[in-house]
Length: 136
Image (cartoon, one colour):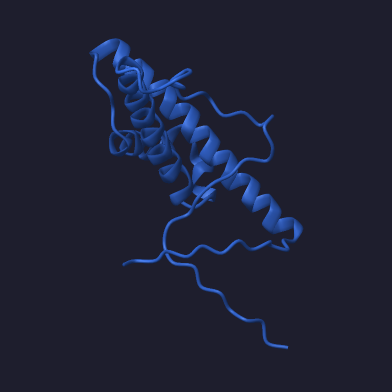
C-alpha cells in the first residue's frame, strides 16, 4: 500500500520572495484565463476541445512575441494552471453526465475566470523540493 504524506509549512518570506510568489500566482491566473478563452474560441470555431498540451504549445509561441514577461517566472506555474483547467473541464463534463443520470444535485460548475479579488492567488510547481538547513 502506498502512503502519500503532505506537509503544510508556513513560509517566512522577505519582500523580494513575496514579489516573486505574486508574479508566479499572476502568471498562473493569466494562463488559466487565457486557456479558458482559447478553449471556448476553439470549440466555437472547430467544435472540438483543445488539450492542455496544445494550449501549452500555443503559450510557448506567445511568450516569444506577446508576453515576454512570462519568462520571469518558472515554466511550471502556467503549465500547471493549464493542467488544472483541463481537470476542471473534465470534472464539469463528468458532473453533467451524473446530472443527466440523476446522481448529481446542483449546478455542474463550468470553469470560471480567476480574478485578483479572491485573495493573492495560488500556483503549483512541479519537481522535487530541496530543503537546506541554514548554517549558523
